[in-house]
Length: 249
Length: 215
Ligand SMILES: Nc1ncnc2c1ncn2[C@@H]1O[C@H](COP(=O)(O)OP(=O)(O)O)[C@@H](O)[C@H]1O
Ligand SMILES: [Mg+2]
Image 1 (cartoon, rainbow over the protein chains, first blue to last red):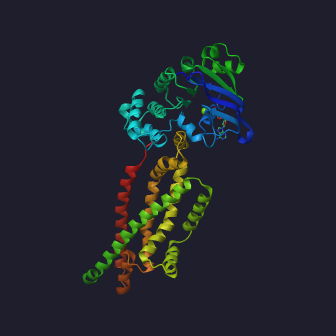
Image 2: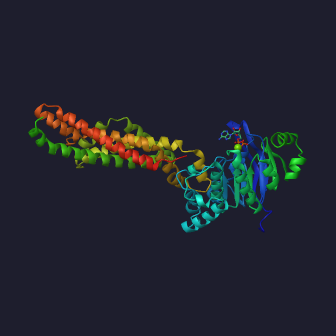
Image 3: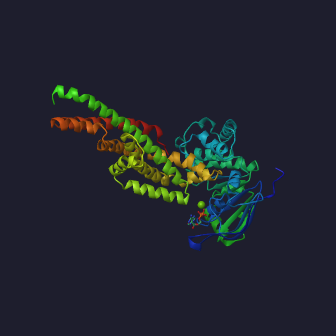
């Protein structure tokens, strides 16, 4: 963990627009994410949070500027290497429906990282154990609840031994009673000092687990602060309003 | 139909049945394989390759099978390729029906959930790996009912073999009629086809149940 505090992902003057330039997601956006931190991104629906984190593992391309991940600039040639180090957990799980739970968790390590099968299974079972689903290793995704699916998706991400995990609203598609089981695992990962960038509206999780919280609006982080400052003394009016709406109901 | 007429015709009927069953199985297998190859190559999304495959499928989906059969049956000897009629028939079926199978799978490929593809891409797999391990296996499972439907059409296709001098089930029925001017044989042949379809759809349903992906 001696690497903590170093820059993990750096956005340099990044532009990203949709709809022929009308929809601004990032506007001359520059920002550095720090290694070993849990960084939460919030903002209004449609602000571009998903697009921003999807750019980090090249599921979206940027229009201008550069993204540098552990010193490597994201581009056509480096894309595959970087994706092997940056795992992603999606809002709607996206487990592979034709594979068992264990196959889902070992697929990436075997096919992408070229790990030995036994090795991938051993670590896969270990991560399934950590998310409490070792006994469901042979089940198919369709047999699991939403919360269980997302826990498998987290185990799948962990088994890639990533340097960074991206979460895109991981609890938004879940029934309320299942949100807790997923957030608890994420808290555990955060406490381990893993590097995580999390898009979420779960403000109590943000308060507890975040090292930093940023608010995305009009293509920029208009506010970035530690949780206490972010919630109690936000500088921007629109952040205040947002917190009132989402957190204080 | 007297029993004497029937017993002299029975060997021809059985021969025809054998030809129809074997040609159907061969045609189904080769058409599915060819269709899978075409669909997978197209899924790689390499522009020139996709264009060629697109042209191929639209040509062969719109050319009558019998024309393709005649083309091969009369055309191959002209380039000194001496293939048995049955091979010409099966190749013709493969060329035509492979195009239909490819289109079925292509439709299923477009229906594969974008997120499931992204999950694989986000692990750093190449396009070919994603096609091979995720897109194609999911699409083929989704296409099974329609491919089975297309396979019944292939069984019916083989009746055209009678037009290129092969004694299949259809030709066997016609032979008897031509000899005695008695259409009972056509009835019998019709019933045998129906029996074949029933057996086939039973097998099909078992396959379908086995490969279905629950979501
Ligand atoms: N592939 C796309 N094509 C066109 N517009 C898009 C695309 N993806 C996202 N957008 C638009 O970009 C904006 C930001 O989207 P998104 O990143 O999903 O926002 P958020 O995750 O903050 O809700 C939205 O207005 C959305 O409609
Ligand atoms: Mg979003």
